[in-house]
Image (cartoon, rainbow, N blue to C red; front, side, top):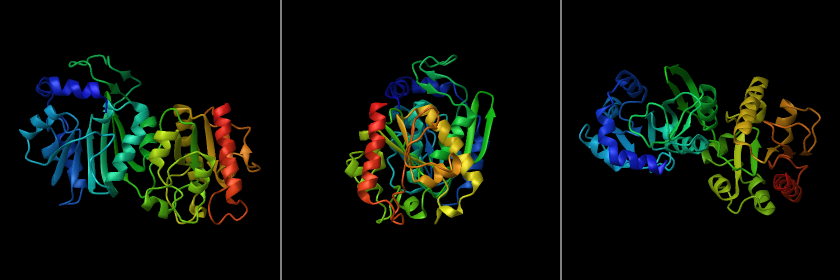
Length: 354
């Protein structure tokens, strides 16, 4: 999270708490009923504990501010953890629900996809999620009517927020705007979360995750898939099967046209292709990777150009160049590892020379 904002809460958290009354207790109680009895849920950015006790139990409160946790300790007797929404201090798939009331709005918008990827990591499949943030187009430290001052805020247009939530591996069940806030209710799905952010050299785009990859939390995870050997050979990455490092160290992001995981790509529908390409175009227009690299011809042919051949395309996506390469699946006997390495090098060269 934004460190100056954490400092504000550490210094003026008591004043903030005095000026806030719990207006969403019924929503918090309803969320608690969505989580199975006895299953652990987390209050993400619990603050002074306005809703922590309404979420049912067992519940864990998490906040980046030590002062806010001390205030929460006076309200509820539950486990409290100091931690960052962008680096959640929980093991994989250990939580069954995540409530976040006006907390993710302190994460810069371009970093929210990775923050939600962290949430996806720690939640079990079908876990309930409730996220509320400010709506609109404001981002900065001078939010009008901020009675505390000095905090960073990122507000969200509903459609873009929905795109980011879907990309992070959640199925949106309800999206509503109420005055100056937008609320998303969702469930954690059995799929991969996007690893994307600002300054990407390449955005690698698969058709859709396999069930195998979704469970492994790594794209192209099957032993016979040549993606990671080719990416290493081409110099795109320096760690095998580590999409977080690929993005952070090398500016290589990863997403899919369709987020729904399947056993085979033939299970996908034409409507899913169209919807997925729309989301991908909006994502690309927003984050502006140097080049979009489609891994596999079938998705691009199905959605854009039936006659497309491997290489740099004439059509752009979100205003960015598109490179299409053969599938790295072990079932694609027509493309051997040296050819896949060459295509990745050519895509990288296009990014560096563009």
